[in-house]
Image 1 (spheres, one colour):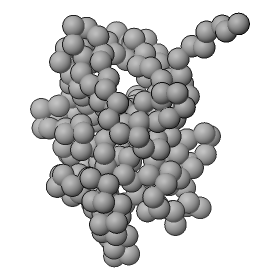
Image 2 (cartoon, rainbow, N blue to C red):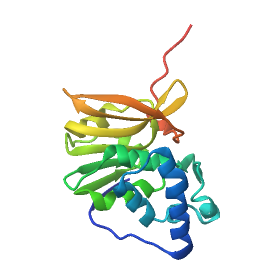
Image 3 (cartoon, rainbow, N blue to C red):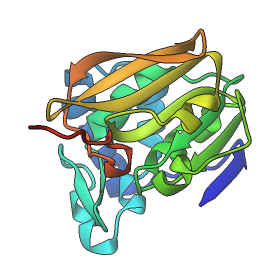
Image 4 (cartoon, rainbow, N blue to C red):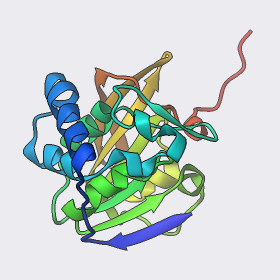
Length: 206
């Protein structure tokens, strides 16, 4: 499934949810180095509980991933906070976002950028005729590799922020597309739900 959206969109705020979001910011985000004001504003405005099944909404502001079903999870708040802070999206950005299954990161990003295209993991693996049409690629999950077709969508000099799986550990990583190649630099160890569709092919071992 592919969704192309032009900004802006609405933000929500309500009583108890607002208090929970403030506690999330003070006790989880700020203490983990997420201090960029634009990130804190967006995460204060968007109710995480709206992106969870009714049975899991009480877990919306816990400091761990919340299962969504079908192998998907909403990552802990600090994960999306770090991703958004590292990406630093701007009003000129054309963003391609691979959704982790919740839609939450897309809602955080949408008002900050010129345009937002959201793909699920299966659509992100499919071949596309588009090339070099996004300035920022966000992947809401940890991957072992950026597929060639997805890398082609990134413009020369474009930024990439994703989770990266290395030797069984997940890390936040960022990079750019330079000389036609995607270069990623691991930044910090953090628990990020894995998108198994992006696992590297396993070779034979003897």
